[in-house]
Length: 493
Ligand SMILES: *Cc1c(COP(=O)(O)O)cnc(C)c1O
Image (cartoon, rainbow, N blue to C red; front, side, top):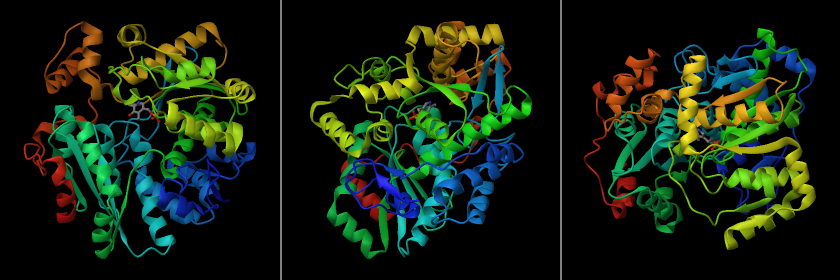
């Protein structure tokens, strides 16, 4: 299997090269030149395996040009261990007759990014060696909160890699700051930057585009890389949990093997739901994919009209990880449905006019599998309350968006099939919003909201969020630097 660019402007390369490189040379995203097939026989075999083995077998289908099965199995056992994911990586809860909730937040940072970021650094570290690169990688991340912490946990103590995370002094919650300030690991550094997220992000972008920085780092045997969500090494582990969830539903007797299910995914960058679509292309019996958006409903409009238009107001919502106007991974779907020439055209229009319209046949083909739905702020809060009161199930704001779209889909489109609704964060990650949805009461201090939510619901606080104020501070949040001093900080590290 070879990896090609969605914009068709590069020679095909191997899986390790694609994972090491991240973005293709023509600005496109990497995809395999064909999808491996998941036969009924293989699906049956996977039903009998545990999660790390399922993961290794699925990853091997995509990466077997460069990676051995034993390497992948060893990485998956470490990434998805009982210590990292107590009780298992992707448990399923039931709501009513037909809704099954796939909880992807039982990892080290209580958000679904862990599912990919626990394994991706291991694939990346091997990719450096497999491409005969003798250098060390330095991962630079600018974060507004959650991705930084998940990346730190994923890359800590990984061989041949160091990671440095910059976060803005303002705009990051107290819990998120504490999570990063107390980060353990011998190859990590965390730095607070004066200003907002854009200041930190621009600082990182400048370092990436500076020839002088690259030369200085190169002389020390170091190259720069990012932990970006467009890397194939982050997307492919996400295919696994859809296949695994299907097996779990079969094993529980909820469905019989071969029976179609629907899925509903709370969506931002379009990575998670695209992974579900890749599983469908491989042959997993998925019928419809419901793309759930919050008030930033650019994708809902796209699935309705075939027009992607980012010229619109940007809203800050209670589900911040879905506050996105450019869903980068949509480019991969466009390639799969219309080929590289059209994709390159659409992406050019997007960068020049902030807008493109897909052709009718591409639109028809996409809407045969996908539909969009959205949930505004008021309905997000109402859904948290209703799901808790009617089903005794506590969900976070992102999951609530998906839950609202799921209930509409069951009512209006398909009420017969089982629907797998993806839950992407622990309710405790967004305690103030969840508590306010249940009681109408607002907390200023996030730590107080965690305590109050526990008292109100009795739902256990996940280990990563427990007692964080008592952990040792390794990177002082009060010692912020100016954005212009970021290159100096990198060289010192
Ligand atoms: C990142 C994230 C999402 C969005 O996932 P995409 O793959 O970007 O669509 C949804 N919910 C939470 C909690 C997230 O962290």
